[in-house]
Structure formats: structure tokens, C-alpha cells
Image 1: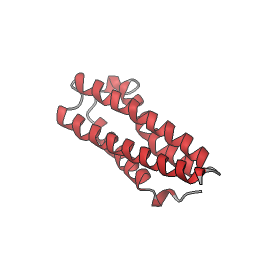
Image 2: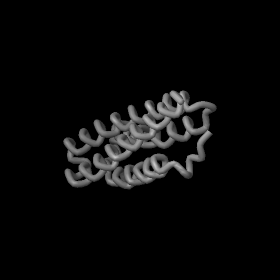
Image 3: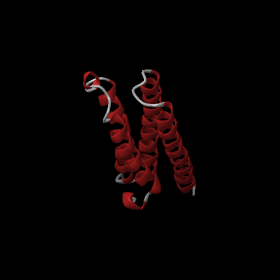
Image 4: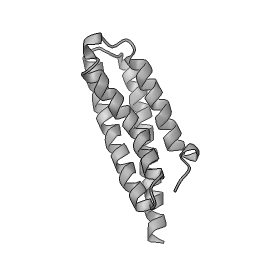
Length: 121
């Protein structure tokens, strides 16, 4: 088991989730159950899956949940692009959020590689 509070990737993904929620404040009310809801679910899925993996009994299981978190990153990137194209968020805000998502993806990749090496030992 891993202490999630010590995992930088988990802390960064929590920050991203709060940034996402702040970005959605000005979305139109008619998007509440559409794109807004989907973006929130994707954003929350990232730290949630990291946390679930950290609480599992093996690194192999943790790697699996990191993969799910990475998939949620790709979903979120797609949804941010759609929101930008619909002019619900600015190009600048889209770039900032996308940068943060990609940064988390790189961290997930590196962490997965570390766990794979530990398994092979």
C-alpha cells in the first residue's frame, strides 16, 4: 500500500480537479447534465483511481488503476478541446488545463514504469 498524500501525482491531480471545477463555473446551465457533468466525472476519476490503486494490495493492481487514471486524462483532454471549440472556455484556459493534464499523464507513465521495475525485481 502507498500513502496517497505522499504521491505527487495524486496531489497534482487533486489540484487539476479543483482547477477544472473553477473553469466550469461560467458554463451555461443547459450544459449541467451534458458536457459539464462529463468533464467533472473525468477530472475526479483521475485522483480517485490513483487513490484506489494506492490502496490495493499489490503494485500490479496499482498499475492497473494508474492505467484507468491515464485513460481519464485522455477523456478530459478531449472534453477540454470540445469545450474550447464551443467557446465555453478560452483558448488560453484550454492550453493551461491541457498542459496540466499532460503533465499528470507523464507523471503517471513514469510512476507506472517504476512500479513495473519493482515487480520485475
